Amino acid sequence: MAVIHLGTLAHLRANPFEQADVLEVTEFGALLVDETGHIVQAGERKPILAAAPQAERVDHGNAWLIPGMVDGHLHFPQYYATAAYGRQLMDWLEHSIYPAEAAYADAALAKRDAGRFVRNLLACGTTTAMVFGSQFLPANLALFEAARGAGLRLIAGPTLMDRGAPPMLLQSVAQAHDHAATLIALCRDEPLLHYAITPRFALSCTGAMMELCGGLLKAHPECYLQTHINENRGEIDAVAKEFPWSRDYLDVYEHFGLLSARTLLAHNIHVTDSELARLGQAGCAICHCPSSNLYLGSGLFPLSRHVQHGITVAVGTDIGGGTRFSVWEELSESYKIQKLQGMALGAAELLYLGTLGGAKALCLDGETGNFQAGKSADFFVLGLEGEDYLCRRLRRCESVVHQLFCLLHLASARQVRATYVRGLRVFDARSQAVEPITV
Image (cartoon, rainbow, N blue to C red; front, side, top):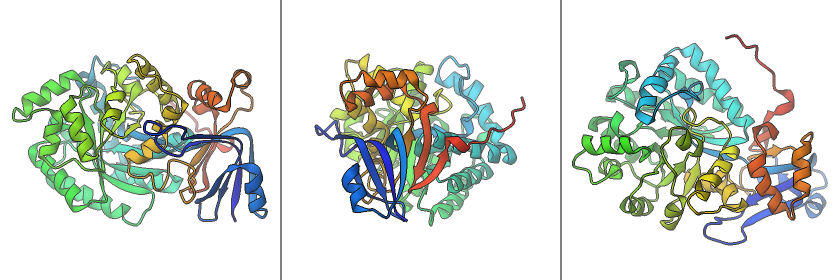
């Protein structure tokens, strides 16, 4: 049966960095979803109710209905590595992150945490996530199974390393190939699951491993490629020393054939103009990770320079470098980082980065990211009941657009009441069981 969801709707029709007046906020709105979980119509309530009188109605009261958040970058085996001490990136990896990732050699631990990881994302309103997986096949199988069972749209693959890390985290090229073949086959008939070739970064992979990654991308054009770039100045210096023939960091990835329209590179803070031009030409996307960049002292992401080169930008939590699981909350941090650089982002730009922009970065904007008819009904319910201060603050806003801007800064994952993927409720705050905790 078709379902009509009632509430205040907010979404982007197009890219606000390129077009004006593309933010659509409907105060007394309705979202009509067909029996296949796809959007039929979104807009004013009265005509939609009249057009589908037999449809089931779900009245969300004064809640806001927002397209599902797209988390463009986070690490599954770092789920419990948040808020770990480290001076900067390389030190933090060695002393805090590699030990946490090694723990997922325990298949039972990884399976338990996979379920928690997926549920936590859905509870934050995230419906699509691009994830660095574990180095261990059973852990990755558990992650994909948890996503399939819970309804999360997942893009993931094992974090590939064959040097520069503890031996138990390293894979041979042959092992990496076999691991990839297993997971690519698993994703083949699963519409919500996608495989990502995932070299950790240039310093973690030999030339042979990089060649494998380039070969996989060429042989499987339906797959994605994700990695890190230009996050930390010490990292960049180390890459230049390790690859003396390269003109810059990006040149290493270009050399091994890792750039395509399905390539997403995380961070890209300390980027040259030449790299930006070549990224734009290749059609690659970049993921900005605000909290992680601040936490690790990496620097301020230059969004305006990326926009000038026509590069699509997503936002990621970068768990465990980041300290929050909510992309919605990361958008407020994005605002502050850009404000420090003289760029003031409005409600339209912020919401775009977390929804339609993220979907475009992952080549999924034909499937998700806004309330366009025909797309998957992926959205979350931002509820205001019981939020006395928030409700009173919103009543002082001069328009619903200003209300949305306030919500982007003041609301958090605690206000997510429900999350839907393909029209199915995959998270309901009212029915969440609390697990017993033992320390």
